[in-house]
Length: 380
Image (cartoon, rainbow, N blue to C red; front, side):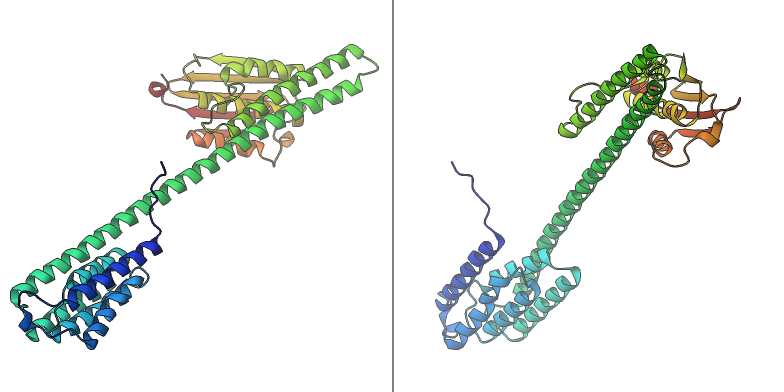
């Protein structure tokens, strides 16, 4: 069974205009059966007035106010000449609704004023079967028509505003997701390439004098490359999956810090990892941010600080995860002044409303200190 399709606006206007023209001609040309002597016979002038009142409805949505004005004046003249109005007043109600549904408040007020003037003219012109009671009831009907149209317009505007807001929210979410993935890729690639560069240089220097050490360097390069490929595949899997679920492996977290420390130690920078407090209740998002901050700090120490030892201390308690990474390298002079690493750390901390401090360590070297607050009840 074929699904019913809603007609296009131009087709609907064509059908509506045709119905109004035909109904207007049929109901006015037939004359009145109740009081035939009260009305003038339908003639050429009446035909012109009926067509002037009905034909504009083919363009009712393109120029609602102009259509309503022309139709109102034509119907008023038609009735003042004592023709039987037939269905013309009901067509004017449709025109009033259209003005209310598609035009602004000023044009609605002008149209309502024009209709009021036309009703007063009909009352003053002693039109058959149109007395004060008919004026009040007719004015009330047109007021309802304008109000219904205005209500529909307000509803459509509200729906459009909600749709725009939803679209804007989706675009913001997509932009945030792209930024997050870009940060993840930067952290993975920068860390892995930093380790590979250091190990490749070390292996090249001792290739002839110490083949065993060179072999260990190249083995570490292989392990780092495989780890980086695994994380990159995970990120690409997130891009491909519509629901955002990881396609290959979970995102790294606090449980992966010992592996990271061992990897950096193998690359030539001894890492001591110390954890104070239970980190099992730390949310995954906070754990990922902490992992990336530690990873970036160790990568900088390995590549830029000429450090031999780094200490990573995590302290968790009362909904606050504190991160402290220090090394014995050259201090702030050896730290990169530009690049996305420190910016990425600041952005990760800002997401959770935390704080970040980078600079000289208490005993020399370089220090990265960050705090990531979280709600322990929600994480539980």
